[in-house]
Amino acid sequence: MARVHRFPHLRQDAAASLVVFLVAVPLCLGVAVASGAPAELGLITGIVGGLVTGLLPGSSLQVSGPAAGLTVLVYQAVDSYGLPALGVIVLAAGLLQLAMGALRLGRWFRAMSLSVIEGMLAGIGLVLIAGQLYAAAGLEAPAGGVDKLLGLPGAAADALAGRETLASLAVAAGTVLVMVLWRRLPGPAGAVPGALAAVLLATAVTAAFALPVATVEVQGLFDSVRPPGTDTLGVLTDVGVLGTIVAFALIASAESLFSAAAVDRLHTGPRTRYNRELMAQGAGNTVCGLLGALPMTAVIVRSSANVQAGARTKASRVLHGVWLLLFAALLPSVLALIPLPALAGILIHAGWKLIPFRGLVTLWHGQRGEALVLVVTAVSIVAVNMFEGVLIGLALSVVKTAWESSKVKLEVTDKGAGPVQVHLSGNATFLRLPKILDTLESLPQDRPVELDLTALHHLDHACSTALSHWAERHSGTDTPPVRLTTR
Image 1 (cartoon, rainbow, N blue to C red):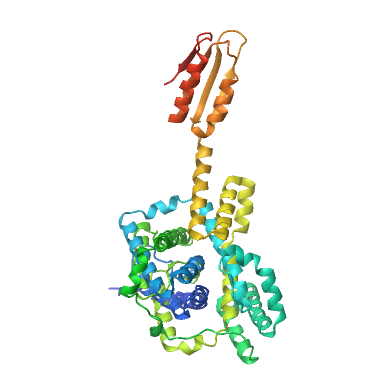
Image 2 (cartoon, rainbow, N blue to C red):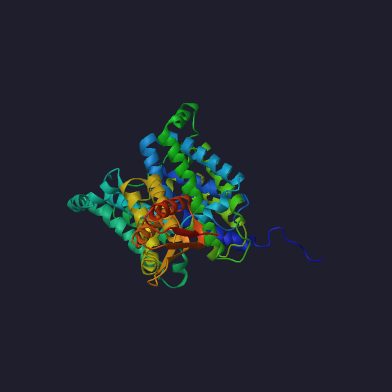
């Protein structure tokens, strides 16, 4: 009788988990530092993403951890409310995700406009790049997105004027260059994750030449854990904090579920169960909040690396969390060698990849309305903030959809004698009312009118009322009557 293995794909999953671990380490550190938090908090979120979210049902192959897409929002939260409040915010966002999953709202995130999501990511990418350009030179970045962009010329002048800033900038530029060129290498070298190779080379060069650049500050894994105390719960009375919680929950959920849809297209295994995946993400963020760590989402870079490395089951993402835990617990001194400009370079590269240049060109040639939604969402995030920028994008998307769905065709037939015949077809809504009334009011006042509404698919209250009023005005004492034909 053949022996049945409990873990038949363990070898493939173990190998894939090592690849994901190597991809995750520099990203976890970079996202944490860019968020204004200790580097270890990024590793803690990655560990929770593997050991907690990784064990739960939902999506079998996607990997969760700290994401570049939330960096800007996390930085704003830490800057506004302080690092101790971050745990409370992430905890509340996780509980909100759990509630949404329990209410089976996961599938509704699939109905969100893709242009809004891409615009959100593009806006995040622009703010992330602008902020990390300052970090690449070892300079302090302004707070607002517009201020970051406007301050870049002055920052460039400052960076070129000092030896330390030039060295820092060179390390960051070298990191980006290595990441871009590394994947073109043939053979085994090209199989090493580019981000990891770039960080290792930057660390080696910085140490070998004693370059005057800042490195990661190490606090220790367990010293970085900061469970929220009762004194920090008071921030929940702040309206701004509540808005941040909603933004965390909605944006993290949308990014995770869109990532799940993308990962499902990469493999032929079990499909994602969206409500369960939303609850898994909520459970992970709840644990992250209890530990005072960064929020998590499913990350497409790590997830695609997991699939491409041959992962077959969720064991790969759980094992990647084990490797992160062992690295953070046993080799903390290694973190202190990593130059901060190298992490800035990694995030500049990540921010660039968030901007859908090809997709925008395709939309512009095919669906300019969708392209406009994408651009307006991105610009709004840069100009205002993440949450309000997404709301602006969603509102514009709704208006665009309403406008396009209210197409109405108006045909006027005038044979010179007898009544003027007017046929309306399509969807008559208030958005098309000016056009309809302009046409009707231009009809001859001394002729009877037959207004045929039987071909309309939809006639809203505003149009119905306006047409009735027009018919009454046209059918005056000295004017032939209007005959309305409806279903």
